[in-house]
Amino acid sequence: MSGDTIQFDETAVGPLHGVRVLDLSRLVAGNMISLQLGDFGADVIKIEPPTGDPLRAWQENGLSLYWKVYGRNKRSVVMNLRQPEAMNALWKLIETADVFIENYRPGTLEKMGLSVDKLHEVNPELIVVRVSGYGQTGPYSHMPGFGTIVEAMSGFAHRTGFPDREPVLPPLALADMIAGLYGASAVSTALFARQNVKTKGQVIDLSLLESIFSILGPEAAIHKLTGKVNGRIGSASNTASPRNVYRCKDGKYLALSGSTQTVAERIFTVIGRADMIKDPRFATNTDRIVNRGLVDEAIGGWFAKIASDDALNLMREAGATVGPVYSSADAAVDPHFIDRGVIVEVDDPELGPVPMHNIVPRLSQTPGTFRRAAPELGADTASILSEAGLSDAEIAVIEGGEQ
Image (cartoon, rainbow, N blue to C red; front, side):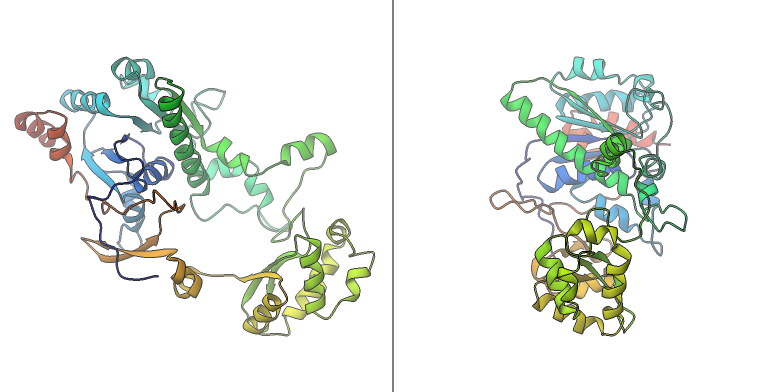
């Protein structure tokens, strides 16, 4: 971590200043969208049920650290949307919003009386982001779709792990994170179109399945045009060799990639096998992929006889692309992470300094800002509803009817 603890500054202004986002979503994907928008200055109003976003219940040792990260730069309003007064208040907020994010099962928004047609009738310029497992149409659209399921159905799990073992699901919300990044990009595009192409409001149909399927690249084309279905190959690659994770003499692991001919030749030279450069079994990347096992045997044997620090230094000095397999604890003390401020500590009013990822990406002229710590549940209900023009009596009814 780099520098002093960051103090939140509510007066800071980012490039999305003036954009108001209503986030009715739950868990990761929608929160990732509004996190990105909030980091760059949007006024994100998190509409939560009386029980709060379920993300608040994702805890480590009793600490709601997921919420501390994904809830930053947001304001929290608690509304029981089964209550007529709360729905009336929501409509007032919709009138002033630029972006509306939801991740209910398709059809639920309509049942709540919040159909896209009605939203656009009240606010023609509203950008509506509809996050779902499978999309708003299609045979599976009605089914609930958590990231775990689409990580399996997309083909991602089929490609992850070792061939003699079961498919491996990611231990984190990967599909949601990818969808969240796509969603933030789509919102930015829609905002640009609204300003420069003079479009009105539009709907962003964002499916977790399609988002994670996209990262498989040309897998569909490979199957269609070659008949091949790529399977699990551990930490190796179908497109490059050498490429793998290797265990060193001290038990630590290093990741190595020789994706270009020059780098591959440097690796062979470092391990004392310059003969492999001219060997027809290893002369080209295509040859090396065919003989991947022999390549890994040669490189793995070298790593097994040398300590990780020594191996890392020798490879880097030769211009090979190699790096250690880090845990979060390793990353926290790495000099590059520290110098770049990849991890920053922010001053949370409840927990004190809380490490979290810095704002990504870095814009030279209009950087993101840390304006607000993740709010306590409903912390901004009264102030936001007052901004919307509700009287104290109306606010009291909503706050008193949260259960």
